Structures are given as structure tokens and as C-alpha cells.
Length: 610
Image (cartoon, rainbow, N blue to C red):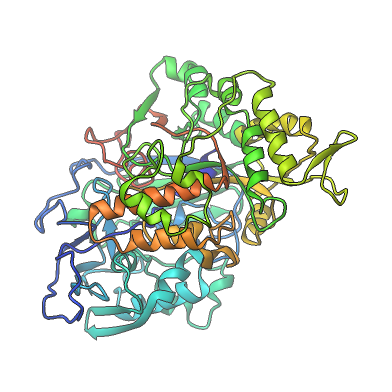
């Protein structure tokens, strides 16, 4: 599904300045000096005098029109607040941050609104110097006052994703005409980079206005290449490239933002969207189902060459895509129940039915990368980290774990039998054909889906009969995007779909996804409700690692805890990016490490059609 699959493109990731890796203990400015970039380990790949990013076409032509499609409607044009449902693309197209993230390095930021970044060797503070030419789309300069206001407002009134950084800032202050310094209240090697990724808004726009209630009545002013030109609530948004865009000649922006117009059309569901693509009403579509890619993309426009099928490989982890259980609710607070529902999920049969068996399964959160858990028992540093919590964590986190595998048949008898044993151990037995606990209460739960998510619905349609054979009667509820977002923000679901894309350099966003503090925050991204001291400790180890080896070990340990916790039912791995597009659309020959993402398509594509 386009909206669910790519709503989370924006990676909140970690990084470290290219300075000595060891702590200095003082954190004064004696050893600090401004730099054009900041990197995770070692030095940034590109020198200060780089000409363009390595995966762009610096001579890409400007012009043309790109039409993309979303499912569901929208009732807001402010992507930075909790209230409302905006088109998810807006926060990438209309606003910029102090730094810009390269998609060809695990995590490196280069100056955008900021011409330089400076931080202490112990990284307890970071200082940015704004470019004197930086401008908002209305022509007004981007000032330190705008930066400070943006950090505070987003951190206190904005979406929950901005809360974590604000809570880590002890002080933010102007230190020069174009300089702003953030001092942190804790040791965290990633915070300096997170600070460089916050969107910057125009302070004066919101004087005497309620930022949290803007909806469709006030469009936030940003500094990015695109501005909203027109819209019709729930139907479309048209963005035009600003001809006076302040950074069009900067090396970091060469070969990017090439379309004159980007139009976002909204459709009732994925089937309608696909028919619109076949009819030429939208310019491209991302396909996440390998079977559909092979089966459904042979219509006349493909045969004639007017539509091109392009596959984009990448080197990033699989992340987690699947159905998560809300462990705030009983009986999902019992790992035996979660394990039983994992056994009942007949992935092999579902995969064969829906994708022809073409797509591999996600086996862990960081699988298909060096950060993923290894087969067999934990060893070395991973074992050392996990052993501290041996009495509190699933034993398989140490001894080894693999997802249950079905026999490929529709009945899946062996795994259903194993599921029933687990349920009985948890106190559930079948009484008169209904699974009940000792108090005689039936096992009932709700699966919450969004309208238009046809593939998710197809998966659940196969899953439900297996649950019914166990005596479980699930209720499947489908709601529109607005209702879905409200319920997700309030944790009002038992099971729902989740997609978490993970990078080669995970960081503080892991707190948002799985941290104890986020478990009770309304609107947080910890959909599962994980509140585990062991998980928290592995995240801290990961964030404060002083070497690549320690970082990998901590992430592998975290992966073991998340996977063996049986919080999610993983489905297909998106092993390659699949984009069907108009023949007039082109991308550079050099592909970034992270493959397809919003920063690849549409960021560096172009059109040969005026």
C-alpha cells in the first residue's frame, strides 16, 4: 500500500562527528572547529568542495510534471502537528532542516540551511552557523530566531516524533548573528545529528495563531524547493517548484528537485489507484508485491514501452513489516499467547497465495544486514550484553530463535497444534467450540485496518479462518485514514499493521519505536507498547557505542530481544524497490546505498517531457 508503505520514509537516524571517538570529559570548545558535514564514524565521504552528491545527475534537466497517488483523503496541510491527516509527502517537499542526509552513507549529514556544524569532542553541545543566503519561500531570511522557535514549538506542541529531542536539550541559545548552539542534558552520541534534521518553520507566520489547529486554514511556510500552489480537500494537492528557491545553486542541491510541479492525487483504495495509473492519470506507482509485479504489469502501456518497470536494489535492513499486537491489552501481555498467534499465521501458504512465493519473509527487525541477529546462540559481546538480563528476557534471546515455519498447506496442522498447546499453557481452553479462559471469558480481539489496504485485507482474510479453528473469533474493523490515525494515536486497537523502515545507522528513533518512555505517550510510534528495561538498555548501548564493533553487537542484541519478544507477525521483505513509471521519467545510473526512498524518487529523478 503506497501510504502505509512509504509514510515512514523519513529515517530518524544516528551519527557521530568526524572527530576523536574517545570521550574528553570536558566538552569545551578548545578542540572543536566548524565542519561542512557530520558523520557516524570516521570522516564524511565528500570533501568540503564537493560538486554534487554521488548518486545524482548534476546536469539533470528541470521541468515536467510528476503526479503521484495516495489512498484515502486528507484534512490538513500541516504535517508537523498531531491533529489531522496531511498528505505524508508534504514534510519532505515543503520544509528543510539545517543539514541534509546523504543516501549513500550509513549516516552522514551535509550542510543545507547551515553552512557549517561544530561540536565538542564529547558531543555534549552542537553549534550551527546559518547560511546568509538562506530564505523562506516568501523571500524572508531564515534566522536564528526561527530556528530556536521551531525547535521549541515542535518539541512542545508538534507531533510526538519531535518530543524526544526537545526533552534532551538543556539549553538552546543564539551565540552569534547566524549561530545557534544546543547543549544537551545527557551523553548521547546521536543528538548532535538529530538536531541537524529538525524542520525549520517561519516564526512570524504563527504570531497570534494556533499552530496546533491550523489544518487547511494556514499552510506552513518553509524554505524547501516546493510550495503548495493549489488544493482541494481530500482530493489533490499541487506543489510548484519555487523559481526563486534560495539553494538551487548549492552543491548539495544540484541534480535534485527537478520537476516543475508535483501533484498528489488521492484515491479511495489501492485498486482504484492502480487503474488510474494504467490509464495514465498518475506518473508512477510503487509495487510491493512481487506476484503482482510479475502478473499485473503487462497491460498495453507496458507492452508499448510507455510504462517502464524499474527495480532498485539496496543494502539496508529489512525493517519490520507485519501485524503487531498491542501488549497494553490482555491477553497480548502474555508472550505465550503472542507465540500462539505467530504459529497460527500460515506465512508460507499466504506468501504462495499472494506473491507466488516470490518474496522472502522478514526474519528479524534488522535482517539482511550486519546489524541483524545471527543464527544460533548469542556469542561474544552480544551474549555479554544479554546475560545481564537473563532472568527477564525470553530464553531464546540467548539460546537462539527462528520464526515458526508452516508446511505450505492451507491447514497448517502442525503449527496450529503447537499454537493450541501454547494457549492451554496460558490458561485458554476450547469450550463448546469457543476458546475461553478459566473465568469463562471468550478469546476475542480486534484487528484494525485502513480502507484501501487491499493486500493487508487479503492477508487477514486468510489468517482469520486459522484463528477460528483455534476457537478464536477476531473482529476485523476497517476505518478511513482519519479514524485510523485517531485510534492509533490513542492506542485503541488490539492488532494492526505496522511498517518500520530501519537504517544502517539506527539511533534515537529506536526509543520512539520500542522505548519504555514512549509506551505511554499518546501519539507515540511505540505501537506495541514495549516497556522493557532490557530493550532500553540495548538502545542506550547502541547510542553510546564508541566503536563500530560495539555498535553492531548492541544492535544485534536489540534485534534478538525484539524478535524473541514475539511482538509482531512479520510478512514479506521488500527485497528490492519496484517502480513502474512513465517512460519520460529517468533516474541516475549510480544508485545510493539506501536504494529507493523519497530521497531517491522523486528527489533525484527528472522528466524529459516539457
